[in-house]
Image (cartoon, rainbow, N blue to C red; front, side, top):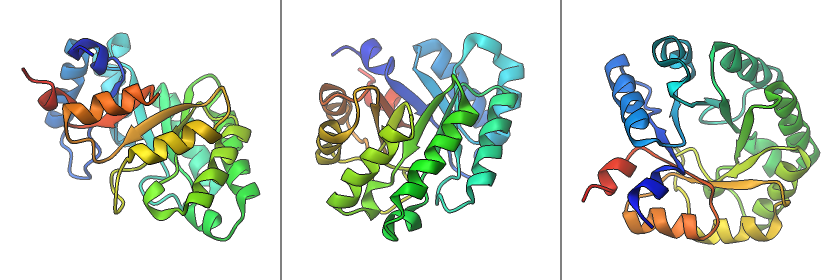
Length: 215
């Protein structure tokens, strides 16, 4: 798998809370030069990026990030604001407390509400696999599918662990045919990038893809 093909699936990511505009500009320019799938950046930078780079760049941002326990109404507003500012894709974090309480109908309803707010824009659902049992992972596959989301995503990168290949294989067995997969967090080598893509991921979220792919 060549570098260009890999980068076509990468959400070039910078989500550190102390990210500066200079650092954001750097990943924007890297994304344009290397034709990554998107940049994934904090919501506060969306409008400035859109005004600076226009349609040269595909903007992804995060919703309810990184803990997921905001109310649904707050998350819906975040989606609406992000899209109004110029984002094309939003990655939401589920309410993990609802999962632990067995309130899977609430999880599904929240995903559905955010997809309705996103409309034709892409919604990815971060389930934060490091906190879930295997049975919970299977159940949230159903929530993501029934809620109408476009992607299921493994991790925020801020939890106790990141993407694992066994979770991608589990997702593949239990998501619906219209749901794609994104691996994020802990992608540390070129071999990791290739492994997740070959396992069926359409996207990989990482801040280090360009470094990993240097010849």
